[in-house]
Image 1 (spheres, rainbow, N blue to C red):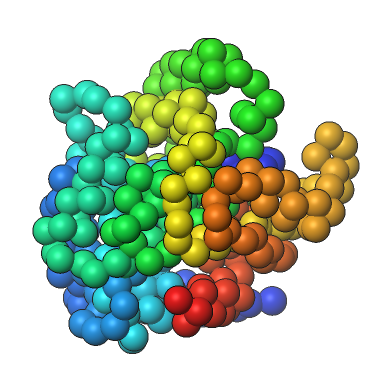
Image 2: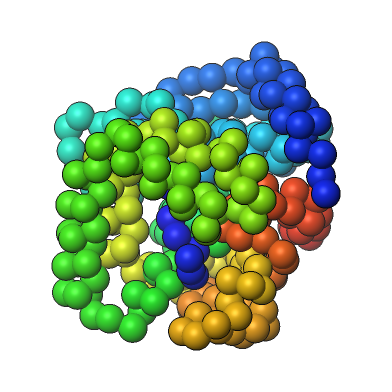
Length: 306
């Protein structure tokens, strides 16, 4: 279950075979390693480096089609956070946002990556924006896919209330049984993750491969986090991708136009010196799965602009 967004044809059988074949091919090509708390897959051998960071409970499967395109002209590092997608959860506690930030810095230093572009989805986008505010000199840009410096809506409450809501969320999520966790992942993907119910059925079990308690802690830290002030130091180009599916925003209290949602996201990024927001529609939280061609074009254009 990736972090909630603002709210909650194609021949799919053929698509399934294509995706399965692509997964096998990418697995053969990838060099894997462990860096800090990250599991890292490396694809491609030339060009500007791109680091892909998935959202809550995500893994490289989120970026499968993205990797296939990027590795032609870029060196791609697809990371998986500790506790997600079968990667063991940390056993010694600590703040998971801090550990992810340290692992990202370690990855750049260990592999001597020259100013990569960070591309993060949801929680991964939030982590990328935080990193830009703390280590702007180490990167050349950020693309955040429905990941913001503060969880949407949380800017309207104080820090103490955010902390209380985060603690409540962590307790509720951590108490789920594996069966409940799987059901929640499916419901989430059907209602918020993607538009096509068959895609939701395909990807929900991948979300559910993650550690329940680690997922709960990441979610709690995300709810409590406010990185807006840090963006003042994020002196790199930032592109925020805002997915929009009109039926999801057609009735109160969520009613808003595509332009209104774009403007709201822009307001949350107001402190960043060089940030802009672009909308991809129709799509839900996983824009790269709902609209892979549109997403890839937006990403390619950003990379070429640097």
